[in-house]
Amino acid sequence: MTEMTSSPSAWRDFLAQQGAQFAADSAEPAARADHADVIGFGPMAAAPQSLESFMAPLTSLGLIAVTGEDAASFLHGQLTNDVQHLDTGAARLAGYCSPKGRLLATFLMWRDDQAIWLQLPRSLQPAIQKRLQMFVMRAKAKLADASTERGVLGLAGPATANALAEWFPVLPAAPYDKIDNSHGTLIRLADAAGSPRYQWIAAIDTLTAAWPRLAQHLTPTASLAWRLSEIRAGVPGIVAATQEQFVPQMVNFELIGGVNFKKGCYPGQEIVARSQYLGKLKRRTMLATIDSAAARAGQEVFAAADPGQPCGMVVNAEALDDGHALALVEMKLAAAEDAVHLGAADGPALHFHALPYELADPQ
Image (tube, rainbow, N blue to C red; front, side, top):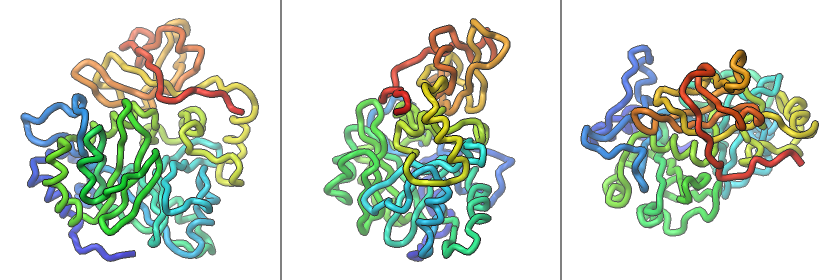
């Protein structure tokens, strides 16, 4: 892989110079401080929830580079999606399951002439990377932490085309299309609220040089804005609180291209396949507003008609304002017809909205 000259803290230092404020976590090891979440840009900045076009540094994401002549075949036997036929013009979602078919992690995955790249929350990366490494065995594949080699910007909204034109005159045409050039990698993600979203992954020097000109079109904002856009797009992300809670279909993962049912074996594959082909699914993930800004991934939800046991779990949630959160909630489909509440049958109410894709039954 190409050597990067920037120090591990160069991206954080630059963002701080631009007014970025970072989440404080006294329990976080110093070695991971460079991956603290960006929570805003200055005390008078616009609320990230209200921005139409923005750019958000995604400092809490980690990146695993998988190299070697067996890299594709090794990952193909570990993940829910097809890696062998992943070409350099596309990105894919992929899951990593336990032997019981429950998701341990979800990735954004792509390849270039250097490596196959797996993007996931930095907080999960060390354990997931170690687990994958255990199964390399005799395969000619090497996993490396590449999180400090590249910065990641999330860009969204109608102004992104003009903002990116200097570096990417032609943008990826459809979701999960990808372009590589001397300025880095640009991946289009699933649209949210009718607007395109992109990730620009590049050397720190490239992003810092581009920042002032990008800021003429896009408002710098907290990472929260990007995570809200992921929720609006109906794209779930496994976090520590939800590891081993969901079979992929429970979080709609096959509906958004994260599972290939023809690719062959991987950990948990039989259970995932059985869930797909044994009839109508009774659990799915819904988009909801919750009457509590404190809603968090891993919290259970309860239906008023059956208050004694949870009917589902929050997959992802982010604050919309002081009193509300936007969330993806995995639950029994039948319970969505009833009043559903967070934490207890008399807790904050959930209000459901249409997802940007259809909750189709397995075919």
